[in-house]
Image (cartoon, rainbow, N blue to C red; front, side):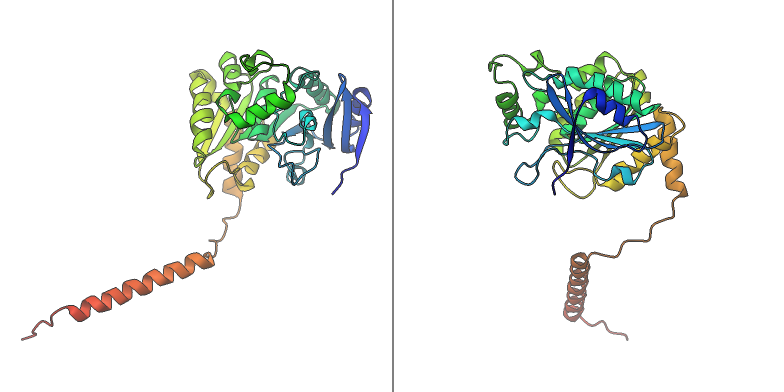
Length: 323
């Protein structure tokens, strides 16, 4: 499905976004380049900003936005930001919203986000992203003290990520960077170092426990880097939801955290946690799920086998005298 993109400069974009009924996709011309935004504005003091994960370019066209249908679940304004660097090559699936030569997104986007917050009259800002988008959400939230970030299975240090992914980024976005020069010389590659330096936002970090690479190389270093006093701003959730590998947690896991972040009396982690807990208590208890057909058949086969074994054992047992 083709999305109509309205081409506007940044000044006109923020004029349009100031209207609480603004809805649409905009290609915002700024700093000599273009950043796509998907906007659903509402009369709300809360603004949710989403970032997309890696994109399968064989299946999807640009621009792609994260947080599909989030606006259907929260009453806040929702703005999705697409990664402008993906247009550099059809082979590029991820660029971490880190920019490319001639368009340094990490330097350009923070100012645009601040203007977006002002145009929306937002009193609370929540960043949302998974994997590649989780790295971006953690980074841009860190730059906005008092904000909230919900990151699922994020990368936290690009130097710890498998080389094929970062190599493609270097090839198409940093062609003038020689192999001996680290990416960290031109972009921020580690949010671990950011949060080690200071911690002035609230982080909700949700990680699939069956994703060993991200648990070991991204979650663990991040948690280890956070000073003990800053843990009051961190809610970390490590769990297994039925799929191994780099599978995103289901919406039933992260969406209630977003709803709690929107409804919480403040952006403090303890208030978000309390709001989440109270919403769970107030919700009607779900009915037990019906057994999966295959599981049911397997269970029946095991029972039949056990019964057959019991009969066979009884047949071989000597008959005791009752006298």
